[in-house]
Image 1 (tube, rainbow, N blue to C red):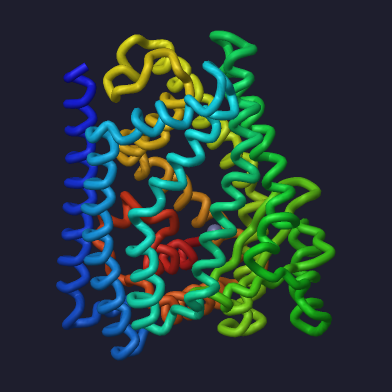
Image 2 (cartoon, rainbow, N blue to C red):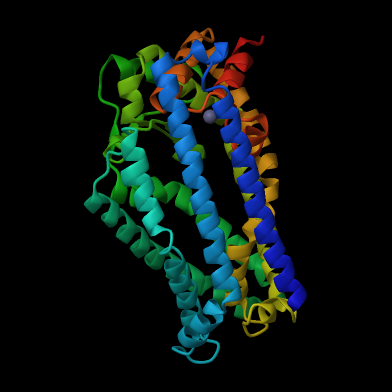
Amino acid sequence: MGIVLGVTAALMVLRLAGELFLSALNRAEVRRHAGSVPPAAAAIMDPDTYAKAVAYTLEKSRFGVLTGIFDTLVLALVIFGSVLPGLFAVVAAWGAPGAVWSHALFLLIAGALLSVPSLPFEWWEQFRLEEKFGFNKSTASLWVADKLKGLALMFVIGFPLLCALLALVKWAGDAWWLWGFGLVFGFQLLMLVLYPKLILPLFNKLTPLPEGELRVRLLALGDRTGFRASTIEVIDGSKRSGHSNAYFTGFGRFRRIVLFDTLIAQLTPEELKAVLAHEIGHYRRGHIPKMIALSAAMLLGGFGVIAWLSRSSWFNASFGFPAHEVAPSFLLFALLSGLVTFWFSPLSNLLSRKHEYEADAFAREAVGGAGPMIGALRKLAQKNLSNLTPHPWFSAFFYSHPTLVEREAGLAKN
Ligand SMILES: [Zn+2]
């Protein structure tokens, strides 16, 4: 048992060391280029914007060091301080022995409590850091309302789902993890469809892109590229942040494209067409089902591991929980699996970056040239104060999108 705790502690130290090392490497690289703007960056940002982007990158990175250390300390305290077994003993006792609802409630209460320590940091990031660089558009009351709504949703959706899952564990015996996977995967597919209709409206307003030339041109592009859409939606991202984005959600008949209002304000119609074509590219190149299949495989693997751990005599016991209780195994897995999966993030990011190159190439074909896409990417980098000179190891590890310089090189290739 001592071995399990020792390995857990070592994994915590290793992950934190990895994070700190990579971010120090990245800051050094950014500072190295801060004085003399590299030619590739000079073509994208004027000197003032570049200096601001450097300052923003460095400040965010230093803030990340602080939160990384703090989060690790909190995790260590929770795991080694026997906080959770105490909570489990109390909450599980609210129900009859083996009751499903009290175990589900334990998971939700633990999740809610564990999110509390980082709240001051989230506040600081939004109202100090983002504010300083002009990105914060949120207010204190909106921020608090968001947190409360998030918490309420966690209980309203999480409680029945966890009850169903834990009931399945009792009913299905050793093979519960296959059934559990089916339940949660089905739920995820359902949420892909329901999220924009039921949950997103609680936080944001979605409006169809108004009639007019832009809408006509974007819908014509959709028709031409095999993505017949009846509507393109605009989300009021400007309610919280000046950062801009576009994204694609859903699948099959439920697919939809959402543009941030900030994006529409920043780009020309030609550039917006290129961004839309990029999003359609993700759809047409089959990235959506690929990513859904990949996450399903990870989910199945995760459930398999939880089933194996909860059956073992050592896992729960090492952390002070009664053996063979599945709910504590779920919680421990949720808290600790990141210590291992962290080291695999370069792999999933590699796949994600491959998809970005493919979608960029699709956009270039669809709008008849690389110009509009490059124009859009440059403006987004300027407006979002993107880091134009990340350290190659840092971007390889953490970036889900290639750097701007890499994307321009990709677009320039045949
Ligand atoms: Zn993309």
